[in-house]
Image 1 (cartoon, one colour):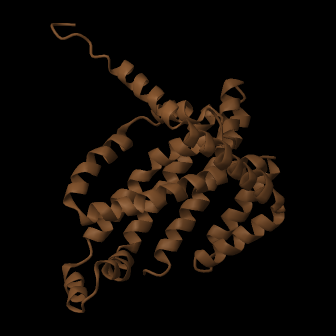
Image 2 (cartoon, helix red, strand yellow):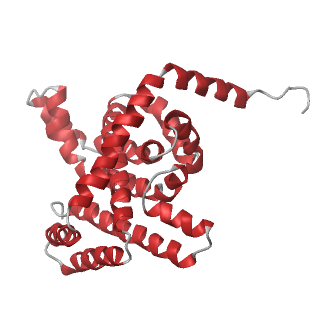
Image 3 (cartoon, rainbow, N blue to C red):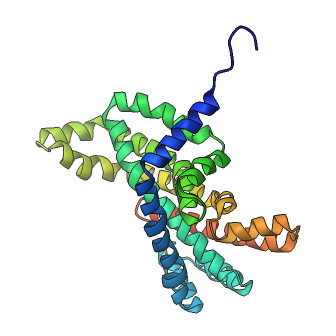
Length: 281
Protein backbone atom coordinates (compact mmCIF):
# COMPACT_ATOMS: atom_id res chain seq x y z
CA UNK A 1 0.00 0.00 0.00
CA UNK A 2 1.56 3.24 -1.18
CA UNK A 3 5.33 3.72 -1.17
CA UNK A 4 5.91 2.12 2.24
CA UNK A 5 5.96 -1.69 2.25
CA UNK A 6 4.02 -3.55 4.91
CA UNK A 7 6.00 -3.86 8.11
CA UNK A 8 6.33 -7.51 9.21
CA UNK A 9 5.06 -6.77 12.73
CA UNK A 10 3.25 -10.11 13.06
CA UNK A 11 6.41 -11.96 12.04
CA UNK A 12 8.48 -10.00 14.56
CA UNK A 13 6.05 -10.87 17.33
CA UNK A 14 6.01 -14.55 16.30
CA UNK A 15 9.81 -14.62 16.37
CA UNK A 16 9.95 -12.91 19.76
CA UNK A 17 7.35 -15.30 21.17
CA UNK A 18 9.18 -18.36 19.87
CA UNK A 19 12.48 -17.08 21.29
CA UNK A 20 10.89 -16.36 24.67
CA UNK A 21 9.18 -19.75 24.75
CA UNK A 22 12.38 -21.63 23.87
CA UNK A 23 14.67 -19.59 26.12
CA UNK A 24 12.49 -19.71 29.22
CA UNK A 25 10.95 -23.11 28.61
CA UNK A 26 12.34 -24.41 31.91
CA UNK A 27 10.59 -21.63 33.82
CA UNK A 28 7.29 -21.96 31.96
CA UNK A 29 7.29 -25.72 32.45
CA UNK A 30 7.98 -25.31 36.16
CA UNK A 31 5.13 -22.81 36.56
CA UNK A 32 2.76 -24.87 34.43
CA UNK A 33 3.42 -28.13 36.25
CA UNK A 34 4.19 -27.21 39.85
CA UNK A 35 2.07 -24.07 40.18
CA UNK A 36 -0.70 -25.67 38.12
CA UNK A 37 -0.71 -28.72 40.37
CA UNK A 38 -0.85 -26.49 43.45
CA UNK A 39 -3.87 -24.59 42.08
CA UNK A 40 -5.68 -27.84 41.41
CA UNK A 41 -4.83 -29.14 44.89
CA UNK A 42 -6.26 -25.98 46.46
CA UNK A 43 -9.42 -26.09 44.37
CA UNK A 44 -10.12 -29.81 44.16
CA UNK A 45 -8.61 -31.17 47.38
CA UNK A 46 -8.57 -28.43 50.03
CA UNK A 47 -11.68 -26.40 49.20
CA UNK A 48 -13.74 -29.38 48.06
CA UNK A 49 -12.81 -31.19 51.30
CA UNK A 50 -14.73 -28.54 53.25
CA UNK A 51 -18.38 -29.57 53.68
CA UNK A 52 -20.65 -27.27 51.72
CA UNK A 53 -22.80 -26.43 54.75
CA UNK A 54 -19.70 -25.49 56.77
CA UNK A 55 -18.32 -23.30 53.99
CA UNK A 56 -21.64 -21.47 53.69
CA UNK A 57 -21.86 -20.95 57.46
CA UNK A 58 -18.30 -19.60 57.65
CA UNK A 59 -18.91 -17.18 54.76
CA UNK A 60 -22.19 -16.11 56.38
CA UNK A 61 -20.51 -15.42 59.73
CA UNK A 62 -17.69 -13.49 58.03
CA UNK A 63 -20.24 -11.49 56.03
CA UNK A 64 -22.13 -10.66 59.23
CA UNK A 65 -19.08 -9.17 60.95
CA UNK A 66 -17.51 -7.61 57.86
CA UNK A 67 -20.75 -5.78 57.05
CA UNK A 68 -20.97 -4.34 60.57
CA UNK A 69 -23.42 -6.97 61.85
CA UNK A 70 -25.99 -6.22 59.15
CA UNK A 71 -28.15 -9.03 57.85
CA UNK A 72 -28.37 -7.97 54.21
CA UNK A 73 -25.01 -9.22 53.00
CA UNK A 74 -25.19 -12.24 55.31
CA UNK A 75 -28.54 -13.35 53.91
CA UNK A 76 -27.44 -12.76 50.33
CA UNK A 77 -24.21 -14.71 50.79
CA UNK A 78 -25.92 -17.68 52.46
CA UNK A 79 -28.84 -17.86 50.01
CA UNK A 80 -26.59 -17.24 47.00
CA UNK A 81 -24.11 -19.96 47.91
CA UNK A 82 -26.95 -22.35 48.77
CA UNK A 83 -28.45 -21.69 45.32
CA UNK A 84 -25.14 -22.50 43.59
CA UNK A 85 -24.83 -25.71 45.59
CA UNK A 86 -28.45 -26.57 44.82
CA UNK A 87 -27.71 -26.25 41.10
CA UNK A 88 -24.82 -28.74 41.47
CA UNK A 89 -22.22 -26.14 40.50
CA UNK A 90 -20.22 -26.19 43.72
CA UNK A 91 -17.07 -27.71 42.22
CA UNK A 92 -17.17 -25.15 39.41
CA UNK A 93 -17.59 -22.40 42.00
CA UNK A 94 -14.53 -23.57 43.93
CA UNK A 95 -12.44 -23.63 40.74
CA UNK A 96 -13.60 -20.13 39.84
CA UNK A 97 -12.97 -18.87 43.36
CA UNK A 98 -9.45 -20.35 43.31
CA UNK A 99 -8.63 -18.75 39.96
CA UNK A 100 -9.86 -15.34 41.13
CA UNK A 101 -8.01 -15.52 44.46
CA UNK A 102 -4.68 -16.54 42.92
CA UNK A 103 -4.94 -14.00 40.10
CA UNK A 104 -5.89 -11.24 42.55
CA UNK A 105 -3.12 -12.06 45.02
CA UNK A 106 -0.46 -12.12 42.30
CA UNK A 107 -1.82 -8.88 40.83
CA UNK A 108 -1.66 -7.16 44.23
CA UNK A 109 1.83 -8.51 44.97
CA UNK A 110 3.01 -7.12 41.63
CA UNK A 111 0.85 -3.99 41.56
CA UNK A 112 1.53 -2.43 44.98
CA UNK A 113 5.36 -2.28 44.61
CA UNK A 114 5.04 -0.85 41.10
CA UNK A 115 2.53 1.70 42.38
CA UNK A 116 4.96 2.71 45.14
CA UNK A 117 7.74 2.99 42.55
CA UNK A 118 5.55 5.25 40.41
CA UNK A 119 4.75 7.44 43.41
CA UNK A 120 8.42 7.77 44.31
CA UNK A 121 9.81 8.35 40.82
CA UNK A 122 8.51 10.69 38.11
CA UNK A 123 10.58 8.80 35.56
CA UNK A 124 8.94 5.53 36.57
CA UNK A 125 5.54 7.18 36.27
CA UNK A 126 6.34 8.38 32.74
CA UNK A 127 7.50 4.90 31.75
CA UNK A 128 4.74 2.86 33.40
CA UNK A 129 1.74 5.07 32.55
CA UNK A 130 1.71 4.21 28.80
CA UNK A 131 2.37 0.55 29.67
CA UNK A 132 -0.67 0.53 31.97
CA UNK A 133 -2.73 2.32 29.30
CA UNK A 134 -1.72 -0.38 26.83
CA UNK A 135 -2.60 -3.17 29.29
CA UNK A 136 -6.03 -1.68 30.02
CA UNK A 137 -7.03 -0.89 26.44
CA UNK A 138 -5.87 -4.15 24.88
CA UNK A 139 -8.88 -6.47 24.34
CA UNK A 140 -8.94 -9.16 27.01
CA UNK A 141 -9.06 -11.95 24.41
CA UNK A 142 -5.62 -10.94 23.12
CA UNK A 143 -4.04 -11.93 26.45
CA UNK A 144 -5.06 -15.53 25.78
CA UNK A 145 -2.55 -15.75 22.91
CA UNK A 146 0.70 -15.38 24.90
CA UNK A 147 -0.88 -17.29 27.79
CA UNK A 148 -1.42 -20.34 25.57
CA UNK A 149 1.96 -19.89 23.85
CA UNK A 150 3.81 -19.93 27.17
CA UNK A 151 1.72 -22.31 29.28
CA UNK A 152 -0.44 -24.36 26.87
CA UNK A 153 -4.00 -24.70 28.24
CA UNK A 154 -5.44 -25.05 31.73
CA UNK A 155 -5.73 -23.02 34.92
CA UNK A 156 -2.22 -21.52 34.76
CA UNK A 157 -2.68 -19.61 31.49
CA UNK A 158 -6.06 -18.46 32.84
CA UNK A 159 -4.35 -17.01 35.91
CA UNK A 160 -1.60 -15.50 33.74
CA UNK A 161 -4.07 -13.72 31.44
CA UNK A 162 -6.13 -12.56 34.42
CA UNK A 163 -3.05 -11.11 36.14
CA UNK A 164 -2.08 -9.04 33.10
CA UNK A 165 -5.64 -7.79 32.69
CA UNK A 166 -6.28 -7.08 36.39
CA UNK A 167 -3.00 -5.57 37.65
CA UNK A 168 -3.27 -1.94 36.36
CA UNK A 169 -5.92 -0.68 38.85
CA UNK A 170 -3.79 -1.68 41.85
CA UNK A 171 -0.75 0.06 40.35
CA UNK A 172 -2.66 3.23 39.51
CA UNK A 173 -4.57 3.50 42.79
CA UNK A 174 -1.45 2.82 44.88
CA UNK A 175 0.37 5.58 43.03
CA UNK A 176 -2.61 7.92 43.42
CA UNK A 177 -3.10 7.17 47.12
CA UNK A 178 0.52 7.81 48.03
CA UNK A 179 0.67 11.02 45.99
CA UNK A 180 -2.48 12.29 47.72
CA UNK A 181 -0.96 12.09 51.20
CA UNK A 182 -0.79 15.68 52.46
CA UNK A 183 2.54 17.47 52.30
CA UNK A 184 2.05 18.58 55.92
CA UNK A 185 2.19 14.97 57.10
CA UNK A 186 5.25 14.30 54.97
CA UNK A 187 7.00 17.38 56.35
CA UNK A 188 6.06 16.42 59.91
CA UNK A 189 7.47 12.92 59.46
CA UNK A 190 10.65 14.40 58.00
CA UNK A 191 10.89 16.75 60.97
CA UNK A 192 10.84 13.76 63.34
CA UNK A 193 13.72 12.22 61.43
CA UNK A 194 11.94 9.23 59.90
CA UNK A 195 13.75 7.23 57.26
CA UNK A 196 12.27 6.70 53.82
CA UNK A 197 11.12 3.20 54.76
CA UNK A 198 9.53 4.36 58.01
CA UNK A 199 7.77 7.20 56.22
CA UNK A 200 6.41 4.79 53.60
CA UNK A 201 5.12 2.12 55.98
CA UNK A 202 4.05 4.29 58.92
CA UNK A 203 2.70 7.37 57.14
CA UNK A 204 2.10 7.07 53.40
CA UNK A 205 0.70 3.54 53.08
CA UNK A 206 -1.64 3.82 56.10
CA UNK A 207 -2.96 7.17 54.84
CA UNK A 208 -3.37 5.77 51.32
CA UNK A 209 -5.07 2.58 52.56
CA UNK A 210 -8.59 3.43 51.39
CA UNK A 211 -7.43 4.39 47.91
CA UNK A 212 -5.24 1.29 47.60
CA UNK A 213 -8.12 -0.93 48.77
CA UNK A 214 -10.34 0.64 46.12
CA UNK A 215 -7.76 -0.36 43.52
CA UNK A 216 -7.58 -3.89 44.92
CA UNK A 217 -11.37 -4.09 44.72
CA UNK A 218 -11.21 -3.18 41.04
CA UNK A 219 -8.45 -5.71 40.49
CA UNK A 220 -10.52 -8.51 42.03
CA UNK A 221 -13.52 -7.55 39.90
CA UNK A 222 -11.41 -7.52 36.72
CA UNK A 223 -9.93 -10.91 37.61
CA UNK A 224 -13.46 -12.24 38.07
CA UNK A 225 -14.52 -10.75 34.73
CA UNK A 226 -11.84 -12.87 33.05
CA UNK A 227 -13.39 -16.11 34.29
CA UNK A 228 -15.49 -16.76 31.18
CA UNK A 229 -12.73 -15.65 28.82
CA UNK A 230 -10.11 -17.78 30.59
CA UNK A 231 -12.38 -20.82 30.27
CA UNK A 232 -11.80 -20.65 26.53
CA UNK A 233 -8.23 -21.85 27.14
CA UNK A 234 -9.10 -24.61 29.57
CA UNK A 235 -9.54 -22.81 32.88
CA UNK A 236 -12.04 -24.77 34.95
CA UNK A 237 -14.99 -23.21 36.68
CA UNK A 238 -18.32 -21.52 36.12
CA UNK A 239 -17.01 -19.84 32.98
CA UNK A 240 -16.47 -23.24 31.38
CA UNK A 241 -20.11 -24.09 32.08
CA UNK A 242 -21.17 -20.80 30.45
CA UNK A 243 -19.10 -21.62 27.36
CA UNK A 244 -20.56 -25.13 27.24
CA UNK A 245 -24.09 -23.72 27.41
CA UNK A 246 -23.23 -21.32 24.58
CA UNK A 247 -21.74 -24.03 22.38
CA UNK A 248 -24.68 -26.39 22.89
CA UNK A 249 -27.32 -23.64 22.81
CA UNK A 250 -28.38 -24.63 26.33
CA UNK A 251 -29.71 -21.29 27.49
CA UNK A 252 -30.68 -22.47 30.97
CA UNK A 253 -27.30 -24.03 31.73
CA UNK A 254 -25.42 -20.95 30.61
CA UNK A 255 -27.76 -18.61 32.47
CA UNK A 256 -27.53 -20.50 35.77
CA UNK A 257 -23.72 -20.60 35.58
CA UNK A 258 -23.68 -16.91 34.71
CA UNK A 259 -25.93 -16.22 37.70
CA UNK A 260 -23.43 -18.09 39.86
CA UNK A 261 -20.65 -15.77 38.62
CA UNK A 262 -22.82 -12.75 39.44
CA UNK A 263 -23.49 -14.05 42.97
CA UNK A 264 -19.77 -14.64 43.56
CA UNK A 265 -18.93 -11.21 42.15
CA UNK A 266 -21.40 -9.43 44.43
CA UNK A 267 -20.19 -11.30 47.53
CA UNK A 268 -16.52 -10.55 46.81
CA UNK A 269 -17.28 -6.94 45.89
CA UNK A 270 -19.24 -6.30 49.09
CA UNK A 271 -16.58 -8.02 51.20
CA UNK A 272 -13.76 -5.87 49.81
CA UNK A 273 -15.84 -2.69 49.99
CA UNK A 274 -16.80 -3.29 53.60
CA UNK A 275 -13.22 -4.12 54.55
CA UNK A 276 -12.27 -0.74 53.09
CA UNK A 277 -14.93 1.28 54.91
CA UNK A 278 -15.56 -0.45 58.24
CA UNK A 279 -12.74 1.46 59.93
CA UNK A 280 -12.94 4.57 57.86
CA UNK A 281 -16.29 6.30 58.47
